[in-house]
Length: 179
Ligand code: IMP
Ligand code: MG
Figure 1 (tube, rainbow, N blue to C red):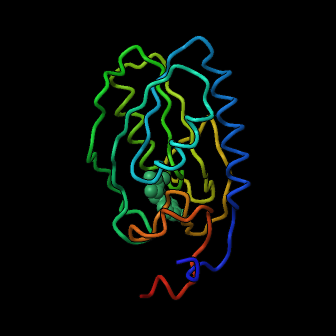
Figure 2 (cartoon, rainbow, N blue to C red):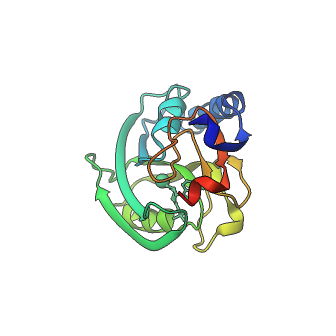
């Protein structure tokens, strides 16, 4: 699998350090509160797992599954909710945890959808941000790293459901996309 990688953008060590920092910032922000962390499946599952272990709060977790992409590398524009929350978020501080903010279509839709349920506050955390690609007006409150306009995989992010288990974030060799 690692043979398919053209270059590494973020090493395991860089990610680990940044996730620790984000965990500390969120711990400070929500001191005395019990926020609900909402992981957006599937891409955020590794980030979410590492992030919450760096958060020193009595928080809860829930997950949503949405799809905006097919198996390719560009957005279809449509957002579908495949799994909704189990928790009631009314009056609660929610923290949405995403893998990557690309066009912003997914998060823009999701934020509107969740806002309707009247949470006390909504905080957006994304591991990666590709600002060059933004189509919908979404800004993350916390960003791990800005990345260039390249399709990236690893640390939860996939290409055609593969490569999520790479411990780093990297770019695939061009020939992989044409297979
Ligand atoms: P958006 O709606 O365009 O912001 O896309 C959000 C979703 O598309 C992310 O949560 C990812 O699942 C997927 N995505 C966007 N860019 C990439 C990428 O470079 N690699 C892997 N998945 C991506
Ligand atoms: Mg995602």
